[in-house]
Image 1 (cartoon, helix red, strand yellow):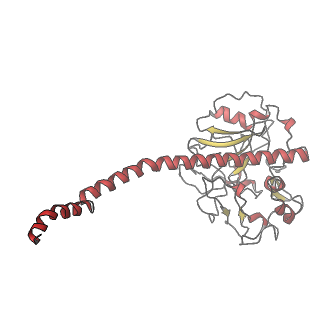
Image 2: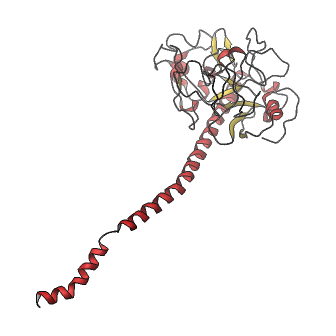
Image 3: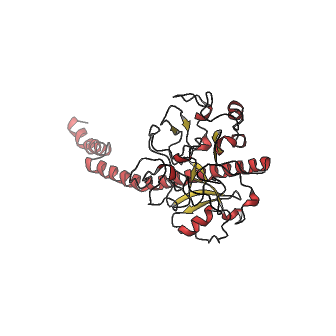
Length: 322
């Protein structure tokens, strides 16, 4: 076969192979566009699944805290104190034995002796103290896991989970309508230890704990939200109040940086402040009731109903609007 004949016979095949060897520029751009559209459609779904998993994990964390509270009550016949100024400590150190932190219990010693910031319990400007240990159960996975308070030399862990202080400001006067945690008198800061029998409104109608969110930085020395091992009530770090509904647009008024952040609003007021339950979940917060049940409380709950859930003995009916 001559070279001319060979070329005539096989040239079309060679040309076809060239055409099949790759995409044209237009075809490549179309493929890229399709992939981009698919990614755009899938990302929100992936994020939604991820947040749903985080919310479930957060709910389970609160369940464990509720069980710890009841474990303490079984042993001591009361819930732990919310906080005390003599010696200085909060409810947090009393629950270590009930959240599988026996090592911390042994290292810390008797919480009724000494203060939370004593040497060893906190080592200044270091993460080696007992109160500085970042226990996984402290943190909601939707927030800053591992957050610490570094606003002074006494570094300590923060927690997203805090106790119900009721429908009052931090250092407000004593009232006959109480939450499970609080002062008997706002001026003298005497803590009470509540019993299940004190919850006359019903354990399923009364909040035990709920979640809050942290400041954006560990070194923010003016935002103490989540500073749950510090008893200083002026900090409003270890409790939430039911004065404002969950994730309220009304600013918190504890010790925090004045800002208009929609998630962390604050109009700092210091010792007479109150912080709302807050979360990074869409539409509400997780809370555990005094019967140990966990519920996702919607932002749309009425102010009156939320306030009623904050009290254990006001006699008001809790409506089903949560």
